[in-house]
Image (cartoon, rainbow, N blue to C red; front, top):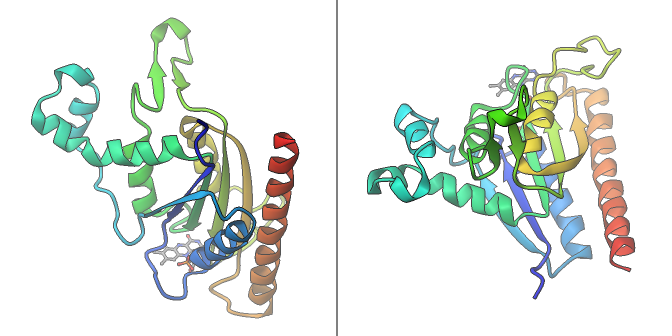
Length: 223
Ligand SMILES: Cc1cc2nc3c(=O)[nH]c(=O)nc-3n(C[C@H](O)[C@H](O)[C@H](O)COP(=O)(O)O)c2cc1C
């Protein structure tokens, strides 16, 4: 029996109130639910409950073969196992992330470090030469919903080259099994002016269009 289509929503803002990235994810979730009420929705709020940073003992446990792990090592990897199971189940991954200090929030990076794990989400083989890492998962789509206080991070913009949020997630998402990425972005939050209001409205409209596009594609691939 085929499993239900599964969406994993990961929220990374430390703010619960007035978070723009969460508001975009709420819009995405609402539009998606309206079209696909039977989908499974998993939520992982790393902004509210950041996973721990990996430690020397955690790394030792991750690189110990599964059958040889002590109970303590199994305990150390328990959260990672849960987070990886959520990722594995997901057909569509929605990450709502603020820009903090030109990159991703530490809580989101901690999640990345917990899920990108040898023999779980990537394999490592020096027989592959200079590119020994290969993803194990595949076929997922990533929707990245971001918010930043400043603006102009796109190529040609005044802050081109200063965005280390989207390029980092783009690079590492290969090990989430992501094959395609879609992004809707809010800018100008710190200015609180008309440009910001326009940016919020445009990003919300982008989210609605994206849900339409992904839904139409899903319908036509099922036909
Ligand atoms: C700790 C922190 C660091 C931030 N660093 C940046 C930054 O480097 N560049 C930027 O454009 N905005 C920065 N901002 C502004 C946030 O990106 C902006 O407020 C965004 O809307 C936060 O997302 P949220 O509304 O979902 O909480 C920072 C905000 C905080 C709280």
